[in-house]
Length: 146
Image (cartoon, rainbow, N blue to C red):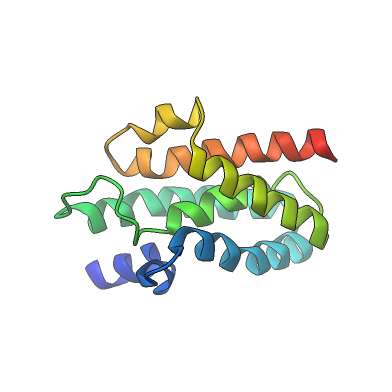
């Protein structure tokens, strides 16, 4: 179970890349989200995303069990979820996805309030919650901009 958790939490190894693992993980999820939304619609994609979130809580808990860091950089499954949340708010166009990506990375890196509040939670929920908050704020900003 540890091997599977590690594989999924690192985004199939993206989290082990020594440079910008969070950014690369956010980029890597864009085509999958596009495909799922285009072929299954927003309703089924939302269900998939919620289930992915629930499973991620368990997987992250397994991965960080023996970690000293509360949010190690190799865990990028939270970037997948946060970026996917931001993409809920846009249409499948390159411009929309590019803006959603830029906004998500901006808010995820800077962590303004309330994102910073969730970032201080010291468990698997906290690891994901700050990215979900960044995704929600990015999505709202996207709607306002477009």
